[in-house]
Amino acid sequence: MQKDFLKNLLPQFVANLEAKDRSRSTILAYRADIEQFIEYLTEHSVVLASDVKREDIEGFRDTLSNKKYTAKSVSRKLNAIKTFFRWLSQEGLVTSNTSENVSHPKVQYMLPKFLSPMEYRALRDVVRDDERIAAIVELILQTGLRISEVSNLKMTDIVNHELTIRAYSTQPERKVPLNDPAKESFDRYMAIRPETDSPFIFVSKNGKPLAIRNIRAAIDRYMQRAGIERFSVNDLRTTFIVENLKGGVDLILISQVSGHRRLSTTERYLELAGATESGKRQTLVEL
Image (tube, rainbow, N blue to C red; front, side):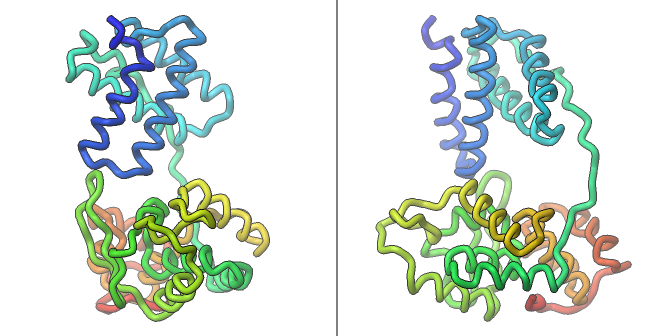
């Protein structure tokens, strides 16, 4: 049947993700990963969902590893494929889930990195004349937002000194306090933000929502200019967590603001911060 063609099933899968209110960044990543998988299968003359074998998925995994993709990237792509095949199985489009027993590559755990005060001040200096990126850097440093959460922020999500992160994927809605440095940087950006009907806060010069890859690329460039190229935008979030732990902020408060689903996730950062136990402070520190 025509609907059994993988390229025809992908849009239906994406629509299913949208119906489940998965985040925009997750949907874009899953679609790109599965498109790459379908391209690999097509090159090997596999075009029907029912014809995909476990060996095909393992072959794609091993090809990625041979092309020097990191184990973490390969594992992420496998997660997308496994989610796709679970959906195919649930919809009765395949008789069995051939992805179920495909193993992930071993991901070597590395301690996350964080910036020292001198390093994040250097980053602030180089982004000073770019109000948009300066506001994004400040938001992540002062609130610990994920880059996807920054990208998805809408005009109605910031009111005075509080921002709302709407529920998405497995994340419940949460409120995040916005301190003076973050609010001031945000207000400076809003003063020069292009006029547009887009509900998203951070937009391009043409008024289109600013994609995660563009935010990441811009901050990477500024980190190079600041001489801290070994860091990435994700390390700004880690810096927020570590500095608040060092400042004696209550572990539960940090966990709630960061959007950690489990307190144990936040506890892992105690060693990184050189702390042995939770603090008692009930307000976040200003970086």
